[in-house]
Image (cartoon, rainbow, N blue to C red; front, side):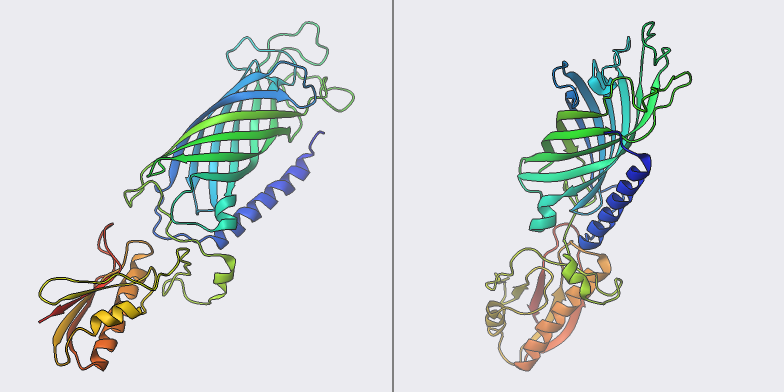
Length: 358
């Protein structure tokens, strides 16, 4: 089961293409570089998949993850094995760790990919994970081992697995995960005085290791003040809309548009008109509220947008909302003397147009 390195390059290319496809099919907005970072600690057991009757050893590690979109994230992982069959039964080291590994992984959130992003993490999610890494084994001297002279051993490795995530609390700042995975040899072993096995494999034929670990992850706060800063997911079908990104980002609102948009009077006969997310059309309820403003009345309008999305887009969205209200009122004989589009003003900004009667 020795993995050819050229084949692993192909696998890596497929993973990279898959990641780019996910990035293209899952657009997020309003994200900054320091948003959507997380750190996790994991520990568990690993065993040789070619020799199940050998004792299991421990594995422990730390993970740093950067969310790119609600579907795609990148993970940097450092992991060590203690009395670990990651040494493929070639002997235990006198060090605390028998081996150390670093991995660069691509993670795909299968729930968001197939089920659509809901604007927040689900209580339970499944992620697929895969990538390449570098492993270094630490060996003592082996007087009776014909293939080793006591030097450390280096190899390229690949890891593939699934993350079963349980996101805790209302803010979903913490995640507990069960992470089964398989680690495979991906390249030729190298050592300063290593005498290679004449049969073309290592002396024991051990080329794959199974791992099961449990992890605890903390998601850092974002610039929006929450623990996740992804506003929208745009399925691939939406990308058929050909528009300049600077004019109107392609965005898909997953939440259902409710026709009964809540509106309310705001003192002195003023009216607040609320809009559905990413929409500028008036609901029947909103029109009914505007109908309470008598013909000949003079009003001014102030339009806003919620903080999701790019600044320029929110500005234009609030302008379109103002124009929709203005057109409707003027058709009814109401005089609109001033219109101000404010875009999104802070994390608490709402999807409204305030109609102030002068």
